[in-house]
Length: 85
Length: 267
Image 1 (cartoon, chains in turn green, cyan):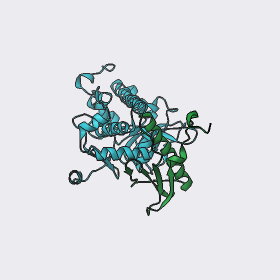
Image 2 (cartoon, rainbow over the protein chains, first blue to last red):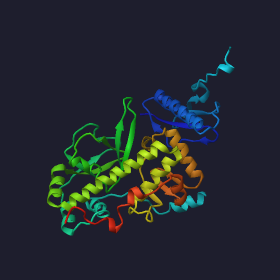
Image 3 (tube, one colour):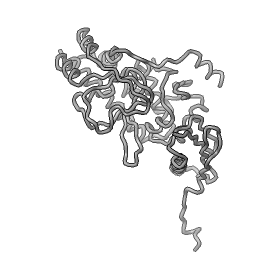
Image 4 (spheres, each protein chain N blue to C red):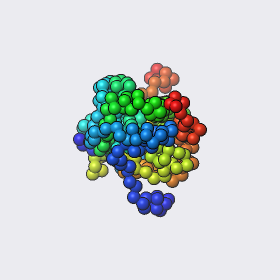
C-alpha cells in the first residue's frame, strides 16, 4: 500500500514524519478531510476561533504535496443575518 | 532540550520477550498469594508457540476460541469494529499478559485480537486452564483477579476516551504503559521503554484521528514532557505527564498492596 503523510498547517505546523499506509490517494484525502473537520470541531467545542486558512497537505514519501485540503472548503455556515436576504 | 533527549536515549531500549509462562505467574503473584506448587502448576501448562505477523488478526472478531493467548513478545490490541470498517482499540496487551484469560470460561463475543507488530503468542488450551483452576482454587482466584484487572483497565479507558481532551488521552495511555511495562508500581514507572505503536494505532486507542494524535504528541514534545518516536516512549517529566493525563494509577495498583493479596476463596 502507498504511504502518505498528512501535514497539518494551523496555528503551528505539525509535520507528519511517520505517515501511514492508505489504499490510494483518495483514501488519504478522505482521512485528511475527516481530520480537518475533527480539528475544527475541537476548536468550536473549546470556544476558540476556527481559522478557515488552515489546511492539511497530503504528501508522498519524497515530500511532494499531492493534495491540499483547506478547512474553508469543508464547512458551511448558515446565518440568516448575513444571508442574501 | 535536544541534548537531554539524546542523553536519555544512550542506553538501548530492549523490548520484553519471554519463552515461557514465568512472566504470567509473576503477574498473578503481584495480586494473589500462590504457593510454590500452585505456581509450578501454572508454569507447567502446555503451550503452543504461534508467530503472528504485524497487522494480522489472530482471534478474528466474533470467532469462538479454544485457547487463551499469552503474549510472549510484540504487542497486541483488542479491537471492536463498526460498520464502515473503522476500528476502536479497547486494550493494549503487552508481553507477560494473558490477553484473553476470560475466554477459558467465555470463549466468544468479547472482540477480536490483532497483532500490532510481529508478535509471538503462547497458546494455552481452555481445557488446561480450566483443569488447573479446578485443581487449585487459589489459582482460580488469581485468574479471577487477573480478569478483573483487565476489566478495570477497560473501565478507565472508557473514561479516558469519553471525557478527556486529546492530549490528555494520549498522556494517560503513556502513563499506563510506563507502569505496565515496568514492575507495576507508580514508583517503578519506566521513563524510557519500547512501545511499538504507530500514530494510527494510538489514534484507534484514543478515538482520535492520526493527525490529531500527531498534534497531541507535538504538544507533549514541545512542553518537554514526553516523546514517542520509532516505537520508543521517552518520558522527560513524569509528574507533568501524570498531570496532563489526569492519571490516577489506582485502577492498576490498588490490589497490589500486600494486605490486599490474601486469599479470599482458597484455603
